[in-house]
Image 1 (cartoon, helix red, strand yellow):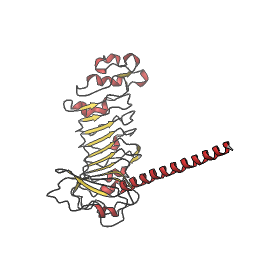
Image 2: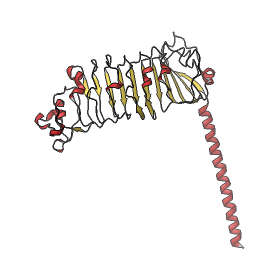
Image 3: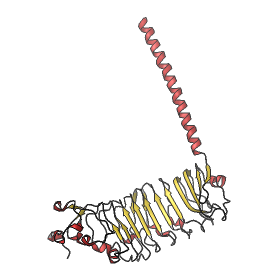
Image 4: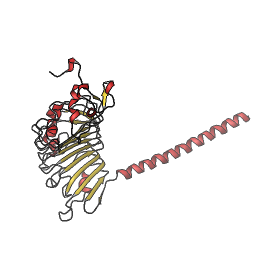
Length: 339
């Protein structure tokens, strides 16, 4: 009888603890739901004085733009407004979404857009085409199905992709306005790169790809001629080689950054304009596993402003800098000599 009563008491105790645990769990879940609801409440906040940041978050419908956006920013007080929309989940981006904000910068940060803007005489950027100079997509935001969405932005100078997931660098980038001068792809996972990715952006001054697996780069990805290109950065971009014509018809190129890749061999022909204008140009080639064969001889005479990695191979030269190695030691096996 004692054993039976003890067992019954034990069952009752377990049941009580189970119920108590469920109630506690329920309170935790309820609290989490309340936190989510609060976090998802649409809100817009203005901050800053000389440069205003207008931050909106928690949008879950296109209608929230009209409901929560302030649209009476005046040119005399607001010559530079940075508009940030973050942590939002939209059915679509409405026409005239930013009208009246005077935005010179628009950033979408962790913003999902599930549908197309309805066809009308207006587009999402109607009302800010005279002001908008920079557009940023960050933290896995949905990018436009076609970059032609930004075509009406005749003042646009810079497009940035930051912390993006599985983004496709398509040839629709060529539908961006001709005013675009800079494209940056940073800390992003690249799904693919079109061979003519930026070929139509004739006024491009700078391309910056960093910590993003572009994997290979072709001269066809840039305008040709690239009369205005001054800076090209392909840093930690998972590159194993370079096109020999990398800098062809880029007469103003002054900065070339190829650090932190897996490039074993560099060709002098890839750097012609930089070597021609030795005094005001620089290439940064360090943090690559350099094979110090005959193709590396030109690195023996590079300007002081350049950086180059120490030799990784052959073993007899490992760790040494090319500038400290006699050219006669930088040799190729007969099969790999230049013809």
